[in-house]
Amino acid sequence: MRTLNSLTKLTLAAVLIFASASACALSISITSDPDNRTPVASGTTIDVQLTGVSGTISVSNTNATSVTATKISSTSTKSIYRLKGVSTGIANITFKDSKGKATAYLKVLLRQGTLDGRQLASNCYQCHGTNGTGGFERLLGESYSEIYGELVELITEQEDEGEIMKAHAMGYTDAQMQALANYLAQLR
Ligand code: HEC
Image (cartoon, rainbow, N blue to C red):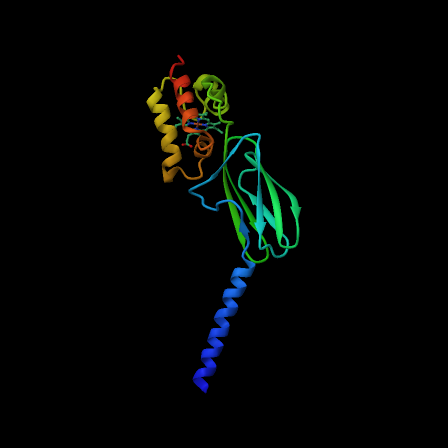
């Protein structure tokens, strides 16, 4: 009798834990994987839905100059937020309620089709000097493969995690990085 009792208790506890975990978890409608960021073109928006909400949601954003988040509707258990791509870069937006949290990992890309190297490169001059003549690191005089290779390396190498230039480089498509390297490499 005693054994049966504790077995019943154990089963009941397991069922309760399972029920509470599945009923209350906050979840988000886009992938929540830092290695597979959701792309957003600058100047465009995506709407994300949060379900399983309990209590009020607080939002934290690692890079509000790249992405803004605005609540557009909510019920007691669901909320919809509109995320807007503002400028190239990466941002992590974390939604937190009283039971848990969910994070949207985004990368803001320039609008597809922008492949004008000169126009793209003008974005670099605030930190690397006009035509890449100085600033943080001189780009003028580097070859196509040096510039393109460094950009690809910045995106793929773990040790650059969190640095300014990594965030910046992640905002470009491969074709845009090639156009940039092409343009910068022919400057004298
Ligand atoms: C907000 C400032 C900023 C902007 C804008 C910027 N960079 Fe950089 N860049 C840096 C800094 C800081 C470094 C040096 C250190 C690092 O973060 O690796 C760097 C380094 C680099 C490097 C060398 C990386 C290496 O591993 O040696 C290249 C190539 C580069 N930038 C290209 C560009 C290009 C092309 C653009 C425009 C599309 C650009 N940068 C825009 C700040 C910036």
